[in-house]
Length: 247
Image: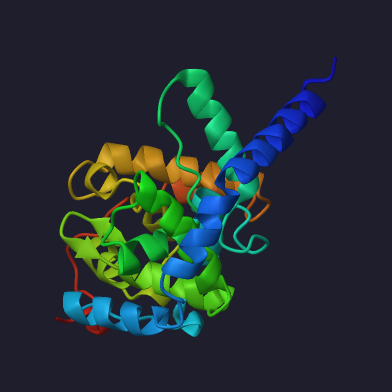
């Protein structure tokens, strides 16, 4: 028997069961949670609080966005805040392995977690996170969500935002980076304390390689481009930082 249809049926069954069980709770949550219309004001307040750059859609390099999508949320441009396929797959994996190993969070959910939930979305807050993600997608465009997410996301020990990380790791502003550098920025956000290249360069190299492999799978880059990017140093040290990175 072909395993693909079986897996697809399992995912579909999980979606039906989860939807049936959670429908009443989700309806209540929709009414009781914030409308999401203040999300941009919340992002602005958060970036002001940390003293970091609030990026606009025009400030996000295309290759960085592709690296983030390939790594964090491959259906980002087609879902409406919740990736039902990814969520069902994560649920099946967790049940099979008897763990809470895969969260299935989208980029939108991660943004909501930071600006509405103080960085916490376990347990009941995970459901709140999902509902708010649906609402935020009705307010913001995909490019704006990506820009907001990359503006405030944790990017290392004591660092937030890809602009801060770009200057710290590469001594250059975001728009002047290479493919390998964009891949590293996309990869470090998943576990900033682990993949911060100033803490563990070897782990950062390994994570960058995983991101580049995902980008190949998504058709964003070629194997030759990934090979060249993997040869880059993970940090730029010495020399003179770009004036745009001056304190």
